[in-house]
Length: 519
Ligand code: NAD
Image (tube, rainbow, N blue to C red; front, side):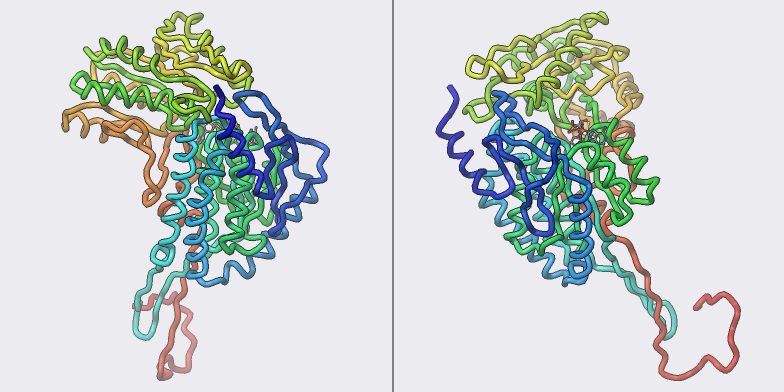
């Protein structure tokens, strides 16, 4: 049964925010501090992935609206970049409070538009909120360098903002990813144009209103919606100095190339295929629960989802138990109590995932657990796929591609070295985990594995925001990672000032043409 009362309550909580719609109206842009109706003639439908009900229509922002947003951000930059660091810190403090107060509305918007469970939607928000909480430390984190370099001469570094920046977000974390960039850009003194995913923009709209209530001046954050034309406008606009992108490999490579060719600084977090090595000495219960949770949670629509299990030696005998644990996970609408996996984002995503499952069998693999015909009686139109486990090898499409669904590929290998070789030959490098009780194995794994975020008995090793999100290989393009020190570096540039204040005139009458060395 659908929890209608919970849903009705959540719809009204979401509707209290100006930019959102849950009843088939339009999602607004947010430009210069105003929630504005676009004049566009082109819209994207946002559908509830459990029911296909139309929730909202998202505009393809027009060229002139985009220009207005850049003008607003450019104008606001003049004063915001000179606002005291304490005022910017205060904004982050207020925002974290308001996000907590309005967590239910944000989570409901995520469940409604994206489909994940209520608990997982709160996790989505919380991981973003933690970035806001760390951004509060900007007064310490922006402290610069200074040294008296020679007699009467000092050098100090000013860490300055870049100007107007832009952030392009994916559908799978509608709150967390906007919150990776909004606080970091704002506390460092930049202004921002955010383009949320056109598939689930509601959480970003609520966050924008909360930023305004937290005292962020008009124009510091602007939201423009749309698809590829908006992305291209961001990559091409000369006033935009930096672009943060999170999303698929395909979009990310194009955006990285186009924006860097236009002289912009870019950080791009891309796709993934995360492996876990399961050693036969691992704690069986912890390992099996961790693998099932990380492979199938959020219906596998996480960039850190665990999608390949490498079973070393005798660990291959654990597969039947893994299947049993996967079977116990409940597939249902995200608002329903007890749900473990909600629907995929769209019918097209479901077709793609089921096609990749079929390809495993066509290419000689085995479907050990098949979630394609999962029954969800109260949601007959939902884009559901149940937990699926495939036995495959590394040449198959189901291994090669990021499936982005609740599908785990299992491979049996004889040794740790063999497992490491598979991971190190794989294209992406977001995360990799090893389950073992041996310190020596863990240390060898940590040292030799080539991926950016490593878990030892931890299935989803996404670093908390005092660190940075450090995917590598094909999972990242750019030089500075998201949030943490990487985020501050990304959103700032150094100005190094050398000054001479000498009481007496000791330089004599003649100009020196030699390179000054100051020693
Ligand atoms: P996506 O690439 O389809 O969309 C991301 C953004 O790019 C959206 O705002 C979209 O409008 C825009 N876009 C889409 N196609 C484009 C194109 N051809 N040219 C220009 N812009 C385009 O990604 P998605 O489906 O929304 O998100 C899922 C993907 O994101 C997965 O691959 C996942 O691994 C990845 N992801 C990565 C991380 C990470 O931190 N590495 C985090 C979350 C998601």
